Length: 629
Image 1 (cartoon, one colour):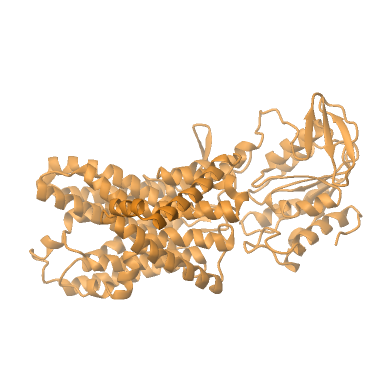
Image 2: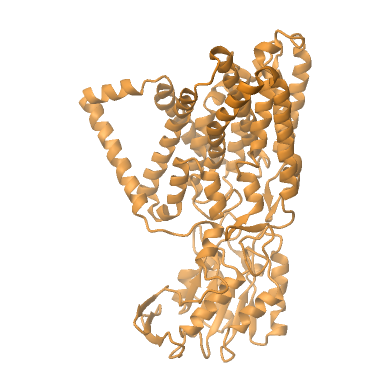
């Protein structure tokens, strides 16, 4: 198979689109579709290579194929894992627990399924996830493992009928698109899997909640459409055969197709948003992927035809440099973005984007020249020989191994922690599970609990149901309230916050705190819930039913966040005093615009504490308590 520089140029367009999208969704709303372009190119090229090898040798050497793939993919991947591991150990050690699973999934090429199972997919924010982008490499590597076996069987049985097989593969791709369109769940997707409440977009598989649309986006089967589309086209459009056939002088017509294809990709990448206000774009799941694949085939047809100009234009030196290093650029750019912004779904500024590129490009070039290319040429054995015979290189190698060993042990020894929406919900006590007293600020001894409050005073309560000295103020909430955790505790409140908490989770915590003696006669309760899911009156009634009748006020905090259900939730919260005389409303939504929130427009503390202070003082004011500074 001849070298096709136009395909490297197409790779360049794809990786630049992805990098822009990952930097700031608003700059290129559909830039993520560059991954689909990669899938189609991969399916096309890998199938061409397998057909060519079978024609030359009469078979496919599977061991050699996989060896070449490993040489191509593993060196840069392991370099990324090493750099991320060292960075986290040295600079961000508090995040070790959250990303350990990502490392294991990356090494085994199951990142996409890991993210599906734990509920930490493409649309999830808040977390530091430097390896989230590896889901697409997992899909491709799974294809590389399975497809040669399928091709070997097809080539043995249908060697003389490959065009008809190609058409069937392309029809299979269309079938996958139809299935995705049918399975797609329209409307707002719940932020968490609330078993008892709103759970649109979630289903249960083997007792575990699964986000349906995230599964369609990340799943190996649902995303096989692009790979099969490219593979089927390879059986119909083989560059050397085309120039010998009746299409050899149709280069100009193919250039027109390339213009149409590039225009289509440009339009889709400009307009096809993925996820806004907890809604997944229905156009994407109802044909958007397939349209992207077809537009990519238009470009491939022209880029691989010797009589077309498209291949030369796409294979210009700039595009060629980017395209040949597209794998490294894809691998390195996302972790560097995360190092800068600290969490997912935070938009980079222009200055931060330029800084990220200034770091990404040199690292990518160094990886390409000194790691990826030498390993692909089989120079690893020679390099190891030089290391053994050169004391300076041996010392450097030992130092690197030692550093990586420390980082690996640090990740291995980190305390296990729940990550992702699903795992977080599993950590919450669910319906039917006996609630327990939260362990925050508690030490359990035989039949009593020693509770230490922020002022240093200590009260002893009995878990067995008796109430000795309940707290005066208890605050229960989600990740937004977590931003004011220190301020609320300084004001003398017992605080229990957990990311992605649902109304049912609030109810369960109240039961545990009531049984533990934390909530009792005279306790004033502050509740902030509803950011992740819609709420209804019955969910609030279930919460209120668990608060003792002799408790004090119950303050519900309104919500300030983008999801489409927030206005309705706030309307419900503001109406509660008419139903429950002991309920007051803390209108955070009305005042949140007075302070600078995190870049996601939801959370309180990504810099100074002004938002957390205002949030706390609004709560204190409802109880007539003095404000904090």
